[in-house]
Each structure stands twice: as structure tokens, then as C-alpha cells.
Image (cartoon, rainbow, N blue to C red):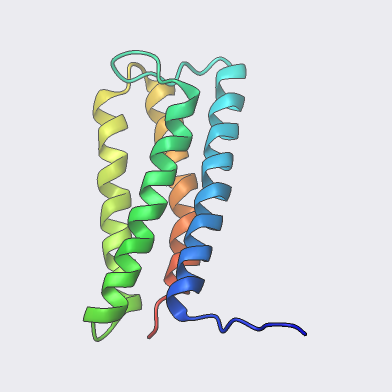
Length: 131
């Protein structure tokens, strides 16, 4: 006898958010490792630990999933709103390294990592919106 569990939109969103968070965290950590091996310092007021790339990417993806859940319940056009908010937060997140990066290579590298994370996470979560 087999049991089938119906997948609800909420469980699908949770699963998708966790998977995309793991993929993006791995990608940003690998990018940071590669950049460091190439001689880019990736520092903003001091050297950034490799684990921080994964932690902040996971946090950003989880917040994005939470945003999708809220928008699906409360917005008339959740996909449009999500894309607008994600684009704004991506731009804002790039300001910090642009301002605080220790040198030009750090600034470019950190901005590239922010854009890498957004490029992986935002389209996947946008597809999880209901309309």
C-alpha cells in the first residue's frame, strides 16, 4: 500500500526555497573561494570569512521565500511585486560592498557575488508566486 501526500503550494514553496538557498549558498561560497585563489581579497572593513557567504546567502533566500509567501496571500499581483522588491533589494545589497569594500577588486568581487546570488534565487522564487 502506498500513501500519497498532496503537495500544497506552501510545502512546494518551502521545498523550493530550501533547495534554491542551498544551491545559491554553494555557488557564492565557491565563487568567493575561486576569487580568493585568484588573489582577490574580498574584504570590507576586514577579511570576510568564507562561511559568511553561505550564511548571508541562505538568509537572503529564506527572506525571499517568506516574501513570496506573504505576497501570495496579500498582493493582487504577487509576481510583479516580488520582482520589483527583489530588484530593489539587490540594488541596495550592492551598495554596501560598493561603499565599504577595501579596494576596487574587493568591491567588484563582492558585487559580483551579490549579483550571482540574486541571479540564482530571484527567478526561481518568482516562479513560486501564484499570479
